[in-house]
Length: 332
Image (tube, rainbow, N blue to C red; front, top):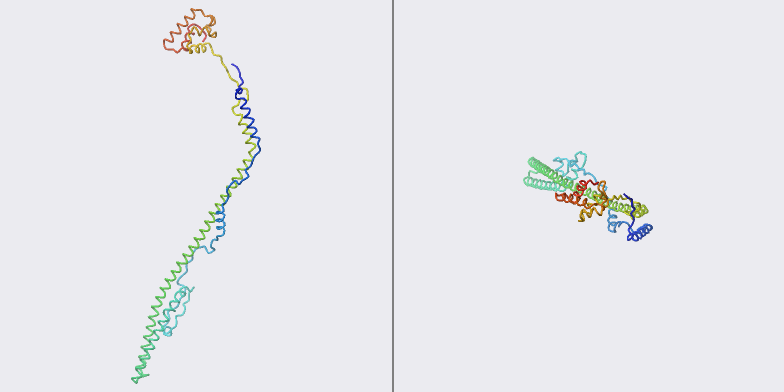
């Protein structure tokens, strides 16, 4: 057994020395920072979009739609005397004027002309009646009074019919118009709310994009800072990596000399005869006998015969040699 120290081969020494010098020179260079922008930042189109989003305002009238009640206040049905006189009914007490607001225009536009027409027809009929009674010489008599009362009753019936039909139609038309306007107001409120939500969603999305751009810049700045902070440490590790795998300390190798049987087997593997191998290997020594080169011819022949026998029965040369040595009393 022996200790040996490994070293660089002669042909590799100059190259390794030069490489180590160049590596150390590179590692000793000062840190060079990148002077340009680390991120792209916001584009001009993005800035325009962000400015526009910032100028949008959500409507202040956003909220739930509160429907109105149609049965607020309205007109009482006029009496026959009021209708005959062309008067509208008195307003009924109520909490509001929604019904009145929608019915009044229709009543004024539709009933009053009918009232006027009925009064004119009654007046014409009364004048005709008076003319007939005057020509008959009965003007101012009882018969004329009865006929006049009948004309008044007909006018009142006509006025009542106009009023009932008119108020029914006015109510239906007012209710229809009220529902139409309520639907429009509800739709307008819904669209106002939707516009407000769209504005808020767009501003939130734009803010998220702005935040992502800002975060990208912060991350790039942190990475640049860490790179500059760790520059010296990275150079030390780089220098250390240049020495990986090189023999920088004494290496111990154990070398064991081959035994006699190992030498003998090696010689046999080269095709030499047993006698030649025994003659060349002084380590192959019989127990208590002479060294290999001093074997007698008879000893060599006996060993050869024993070796050939074991090879003939199927042993490989090494095993045959070992067994022949044992049979001859040699140390194996």
